[in-house]
Each structure stands twice: as C-alpha cells, then as structure tokens.
Length: 250
Image: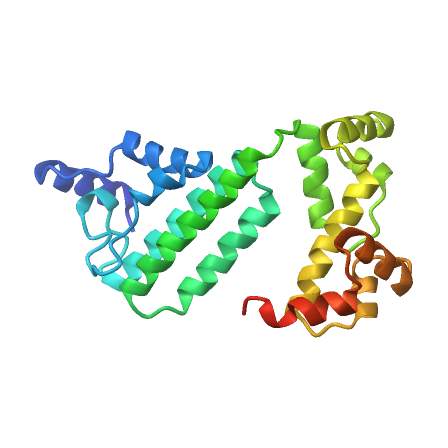
C-alpha cells in the first residue's frame, strides 16, 4: 500500500472537484464552545436525528464506504477530540476518558444512524454541561488539580498525603498548605469526601454489602465507614440505600 500515491491522488481529486474539509475556524468555534460550557452555542451544532445523511458531505471526510460505519468512525473521532479538549481545560482526566469509553461502548451496540446521531447530541451536551459546572467552581492551581486527579484514581486505596506529595515532586507541607488554601479543606478531608461520594454511587448501583464497600474504599472498619458516611450525607449507608436505590439510573 503506497500512502503517498493515495494521498496525492485524493488531494488531486478533491481539488478538481472543489471539495474541502470543514473550515478550521468552524471546528474551533464548536470545540471551544464545548470547553467553555456554552450549552446554547453547542446546541446550534446538533446533528439532525431524522437524517441518514449525516457525515456524508465532503467537508466531513469519508472514512468508510459504508454509511453506518462512516457514522460510527466520525462519532469516535468526535468523542476523542472532545475528551482531550475537556481534559486540557480542567475536566478530571480519568473522568473524561471514562466518559469517552462509556459513550463509545453505548454507540457500539447501535444499529442505525438516527440512534447514533441522537447519542452524539447527548454526548456533546453532557460534556458541555460538565464543563459549564466546572467553570462555576474555583479555578485551582495545577498542583492541586494533579493532587485531585491522583486521589480520584486511587480512591479504592489508603491514600497518604506523603505519597501524593512524592508523586508530584512537592514538599508535603507546601502541598498541604496550598491544597487547604485553595479548597478550604485539608487533603485528608477531601479524600474522605470523595470516597463517600463514590461509595454512595456504589450503594445505589450495586449489591455490594456495606462491609465490602468499606473495605474497597480503604476504611479501617465498617463502623468507621458508617460514621464518616453519616457525617457527610446525614444518612447511614443502610438508610441511604433504602432511600435512593430504586431512584438510581439504570
């Protein structure tokens, strides 16, 4: 396969037919709107969910001769770009890439273009709304953001402040002071809050027992987990599950 020959032939063909890809400034406007959390502007770029001709225009590029497969490929490209841009603009990287995996996996089971274009619009708006919510929060320094990302990835472990500081090549006291100044809580307090937040999702979306959840998130005992959970949510784990389990999304 000679890529150079194929490239030259395709460029020649597109030039002769006066075809070109989507203008950079239009692409920039769209992705910038997502990164800024501009839901109103982003909605102007929604796909027509009733059309089977999306991505067939020359400006999008032809990735497959099969129309459905072409749509699938473009969906993956869109998710990948949006994920990377949102991560670069402050969205937790692990969260962003996990969302990407979820949307692609959901798309993979779809059998028609209309469903994929509907999911595309939902995906774009979901990322945009996450960025909008993020922009309303305080902007943290890069060190605090990286500390938060480390905590997010290691929630199921016993996390020590010294380990985070070492990972970021920072003095422990400096990191602790900086984190407390910017977030209003100590690193250990933040770790507990995030563990409880994640544990609450486990209570409403799994059949794991309270002791299993406590062990998974590295609490010293089930009673310690119960006390921390009640302090943060106002519920015991048992009452929380009884109250919200049936209301959780499937």
